Amino acid sequence: MKPVALTLAFAVVTTGIAPHALSAHATAHAAHGMAITVDSGYIVNTDGSVGDFVGTYTSGLQQLIDDSYPTITTSDFSSISIFNATELRYLTLKGDASTDGHSYLSDVTLQLPSMFVLTLEGSMGVAPNATLKSDVTPPMVALDGVSYSAVLGGTYDATGNTTYEAIRIKDGSHCKVEGVTGYGSGTNIIEVHNGNRHEISHSTLDGGDAAFRCIWLLATNHGLVHFNYATRCVGHVIDFDAYTSNSAAWSNVAEYNNPTGVGEGIFVEETATNNFIFNNTASNNGGNGIALYSSVVGPVTGNIIAANTAENNAGHGLSSGGYGHDPVKHAGDNIFVGNTASGNSGNDLQIMHGAAINDYWTGNDGGYTYDEDPHSSANVTVFEPEQLAQAAERARAWARAEPPLAEAWGGGRFRSEENVLLRRSSRASRRG
Image (cartoon, rainbow, N blue to C red; front, top):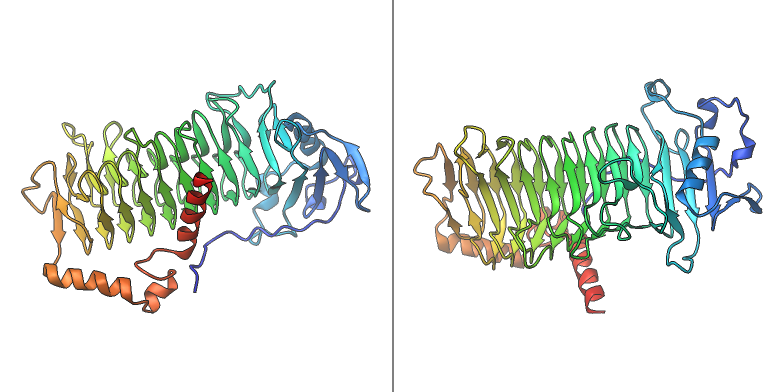
C-alpha cells in the first residue's frame, strides 16, 4: 500500500473555449470552467484547427490571460466550497523545444489570476531580453495575491539569471505547485511568501550547486510541502523561515546540497512555530540533515520532528538550539520522536546546539550528544527507557518486518517507496 498523498482537488479538463468566443461583457461566472490551449504559440480552436498566434513569450501569454479570462474577486469564490473543473479556469501550454532549448520563454513575469490552473507540457526558460524587475527576486511565474490557483507540470528553468526564481506564491490562499521540474542559479527555485494553505508537492528541484534554496517558506501559515525531491542548493534545500507556522513537510528527499558548505537539508528557523516535519530523508548535505535554530528573530518553538532519516551529512544528523545571549534566541518545546540518524560527520543527535528550553527527545535511533550540558530537564529531556540491547533489537525488527503500520508508509521505518524511487532516479541521472 502506498502512502496517501494529501492534496487539494484540482481536476483538469479542456472545454475548448477560445478567447474570441467570450463576449467583451462576459461575467466572471460565465467564464467558470473555460479552458484555452496554446500549442507552439498558436491558440487551438474548439474544432482543433490552428487559431490566432499569441507567441511563445510570457508577455504574449499575459496579454492572452488578461484579455480572455474575466477578473475574479473574492466575492466570486466566497460562496464556493468545491473548486474543480466546473469552477476553475485553465490554460494549457504545449510545444516542442525550440532552438534555445525551451518551448516558451519568460521575458516578463507571468502573473496568474485567481481560480486559474496553468498546465505546462514542455519547458519555460528565461528570455535573453527578460525584464523581470518588479522586485528583488522576480519569478518567471507568479501567483501573487490570488487564491485557488495552481501550476501543474512542466519544466521551469530559471538558470538564465541569478536573481530570478522559477515560481513564487505570495499572499493569497489555497494555491498549489505540483509535478514541476525546477532549476535555479542564484536565489530560490520556489518561494512561498506569506499566505495560507499553499502547497508544493511531487516536484523535482535541482539547484545545480548555484541556487540558494530549493523550497523557501517565509511567514506562511498552514503550508504543505510533500513528496518532493530537492537537491544541490547551496543554502538550504527546504527552509521553513521566519514566522512560518502550523505547516508540514513530509515524505520529501533533501540531499546533496552544498557539499563543501554549511547549508541544511531541512531548516526550521527564526520563530517558525508549531510545524510538523515527518518522514523526510535528509542525506549527504554539506551542513546538518535537519536543524532547528534561532539566531536573529526569535524562538523556534512547538515543532514536531518525527520519523525522519538523517544520514551521511557533513554536519549533525538532527540538531536543535539557538544563539542564546538573548531571551528569545533559542529553540524550545520541540519534540523529536522516532527519528533515525547515522553516518553523519558531526553528531547524529545534537540535542543542545546552543540555547534550548524544554525540548523533548524520545524513541530516536542514534547517539545523543550536546555542545553544552543541558544540566536540567527544563532545558532538554531525553527519555529512552529501553536498554541498548532492546533498542538494537527493535531496530532490527523494523528492518526485517513490515507490520501494517510500516506497510502503510511504504515498508521499512517509514521510508516511503516513492522517496526511494526518487533518490534512485536522481542518482542514475547524475551518473548519466
